[in-house]
Length: 255
Length: 298
Image 1: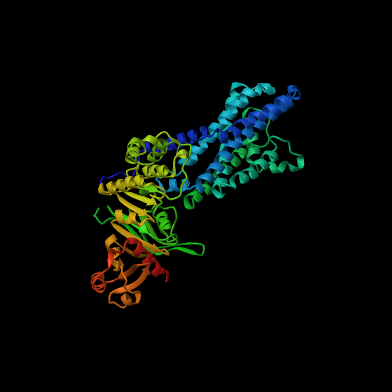
Image 2: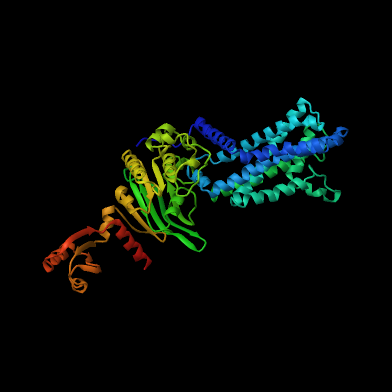
């Protein structure tokens, strides 16, 4: 019997992570119908509202132009993580693919990291489309602002990946889209980043990671923001870690 | 490692799903270099037993070991290849890509090209998995199971949906793997598959082992022989002969199960000189299997 080493060299292990990420992105590229909507929607809505409908009004209103631009950017950050994680994970669990990979010596975190990188890549693409559209919405950003906003928003995809992950881990393939929307839609309306909340309701935004990311993004480009950045970072890190740990534990035990 | 070394084992394993007892104190071991066929009716616990050996589920009590380690450890599973019963692989990925991805999980895998040649899937290399026939999908899954040069292969109903040619290919590949020193655990509904391939057979019913041994040992468990012939002899008459278990008539044909076939045949020929089309057949695994599982049910 040939002695196959049960240990993997670091190079082989890194390659396994790389292959998972590579084939995850190949899969996404071959399903434009899945990724297309959440890639295109933020910039299309921004053009519709920020340029065609209210473009004239925003011409002399830099605060308003900033609000609309940032709102649709944050909207763009949310989609890839929540949908790109939640629905595929629920499907792969139900179809036995995740079960097979658990039985195989797949590095446990490889598919999760692959999907997270994928979501971050999508956010990067969305940000590029937003920056291209920005001048039409009377937004002027310096190179430094573009850089810091990109980095912030790409990292900001993490908590939404975690929320999508935990939903995908707990729901069936059929119910996953409904549960994702159940979290996604209220978060869009109640975080105050797209539609200003009345004073009496503003406290609701405090529980939403989208609100905290919006404030951090404003701070990143030097615009006035609410609350200390440390709190925003702490909330986003917490919203990333808690669901992820819960999901990893459940995926290892139940699949 | 001794030749009888145990690669995977379940010891006193119990597993319940709600009120359903799936495994009821199951002991099962897979030895070095053997092809073990696990037989049993639906719901006997075959798939549950395999999923415990692979660490997909945890036993309520008892232990599961894989290469002497917990099956939850990835180091243990790096020596294992798996083909599961119900799995939908990413339909967008091509055949070569599927194999390439799974091969990346192993320390020293075969090249995807070598795997495709072994499993006769080379012409499918660039086809998207979702466009394959069910039989072709099983062939690809088989390739994924062996791409990591596993010491132990778990195959859950591997030939369901395969045409005869692909089944022969798979059987041939399995024999070659065992000759090269691998061990294989195979669950199957096809008894001829167990008869054709297995060194050892384990029959499960209601989450317990009700019989185990070589194919011929299993047959010997039920010593009956089946005799069929065209004769005018009456059922009642033959029924009273020594060594006759049961007699039934199917038009002109008499069907006898006997514990002492030679004596019964002698008596048959003596009693009816015009007797024709005599057939004597040792009970196949199918009959043994039916009989054993029926006994447990009673």
